[in-house]
Image (cartoon, rainbow, N blue to C red; front, side):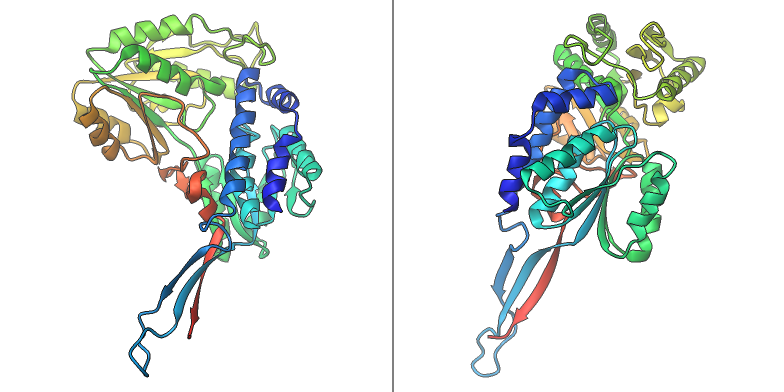
Length: 425
């Protein structure tokens, strides 16, 4: 059955090989790749178990109808709601988490009985090919989990075909907001189901009552994982004026211990950016921010001695909220800092963006925890921590950060249609 096939997919795999493939093609440190294999496995385990629950395909509910029988006035018939697989699904996944983004989408799709067509990023196709190989070895039929490999030039054509093909009933995409908007337009003619996990520009607020050591640890965990190339990375750091100097000093002290280099080195803290053009783009944003009045506290330059894709961890203070590095998703190892003195001011700065994926804040005040969390316009809120993703939690954003949720029981619902059946008894 599908449950056993999903579990077998990773029982027969070799963690070391998968981690090495990811590091070699994406550059992330090998320790992070091991973590991603574990993280990716968790989605298969979770949805293999979720497949047999009433919230999955074949589940639903039955209830008496409100209609009265003409004979004796008792309820006439039963109302049944049955969950069914939506049908053929297509997934388009990014390069920054080349394994986990596959399992987070394909896991629930297969669990409910949807066949899946996967288009991975052209920058990290080898991880997807390895996953396809393992799926075949686990016993998943070739036509049930299909793979499309393409170069960059042909990717738009494939996207159009997936969106307009009448056989495909749902698209799940993780990537940039601009591409997500194009997919929405193309899929509209078929009125198909669509899940979008798009860009972010996460705020990270540190209040005056925060544990600063804890806040710095959370900031580093959120910002510098995969060299800052994650959609829920903290980008805009909003510090209370009373703790600004202490936070920056402790942050820079930790950054000075970073070991930057090849991801295949077990001691590497941070690896390269995905492409040379990505590093060039980060440098341009940093230079623009400085020209707009920002103060460079740490880093801010290429590491050419290591290679064209390497960039130093960077801290910029007094960043203009009008600068590109503040207004746009950074996708690199740069901390941009602005100050606040009032809680309302911090929340206003945090919400002043078109994006609404993740947000973070640090405080020891329990009343503030619930007050601020309710006011932040984001789908995900991390409090006193920077690592918040798990298979058991719903992942997704508001505003231009996307539609739908992945992970948790809500993630499996994205691949289900509900059929209402009335039975006259």
